[in-house]
Image 1 (cartoon, helix red, strand yellow):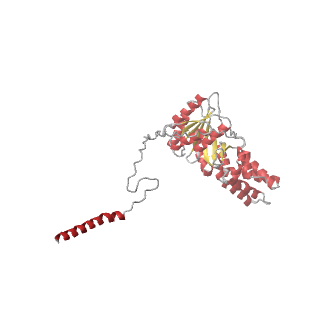
Image 2 (cartoon, rainbow, N blue to C red; image 1 turned 60 degrees about the vertical axis):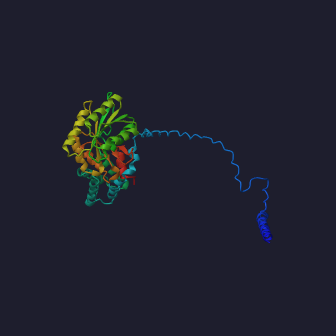
Image 3 (cartoon, rainbow, N blue to C red; image 1 turned 45 degrees about the horizontal axis):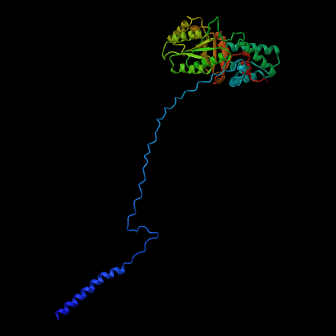
Length: 389
């Protein structure tokens, strides 16, 4: 009996074991291989053959070249047009003076009847235009006599009479030429003087252009050593027309610079040495004495041929006192009247010449480099009176 039970147990165990082995195998079916063969997802693909690495040298960076120095372009040397007739070309600049000395006077003189009140009005117009009291009295007296004798007063006749009297008052016989040399193998020496604010250094540069325009060679002397920008400003004017500038240290001795400039002019054989001096106030005795020293030192080379006084036309009658004191120190030979276009007082030309006996040689009629014109009495009066009629 026990034998039968043991046999049954062994049989059951055998069946259970067989079932454990067979059932899992029946559930797992083999997957078909991928097309064309190859690895399954469970296998690591073979490593790709190594790619040989190329050692690339870093690019050679050329050192950056230093920038080439920037050279300032030299001034193109200019050749101004000859100055003959320049005042005629600039006549429009006198338009403001026309309203006083021109149109105003003509309007009064053309009246049918000129009584004492009308002549007083004419006098006032001339005095307002800075002609000066003495010169005004002479002009009015001569005009009254001409009107009395001639009788008729058409606009054209009156204009002609007024023009003749103004030209006469400007003393057309005075010598207005610039003594620009050379003289017996040496350059002419031109000393430029004036008070502060008259535009002296700028005008000195314009005078250089006038000389070059009329065929002269020039050396500039920057003897205004007290104003830092003066020598540089003058040198700039000179470079534009090919004129050399002799300079000294800032605050240096002006007489020494002037002396060296004249020596340089002699050595190089130029026609003219143009010396710019420091602006002075005429009531500063020490400064005026120093200006006298400049003149004395320069004269060791030879005489000063011209001493040009720069006057601002807008200062009016005050300019006459300036001119008088400068004349005592350096013997002024000519006046350069600047800013004549910016004032209605063109009569100052008459006053300067009558009071001092010194001719106005140049007049400034604008800010341009070539707006400085040789003074011509007839052309000046024609500009003041405007067109005929």
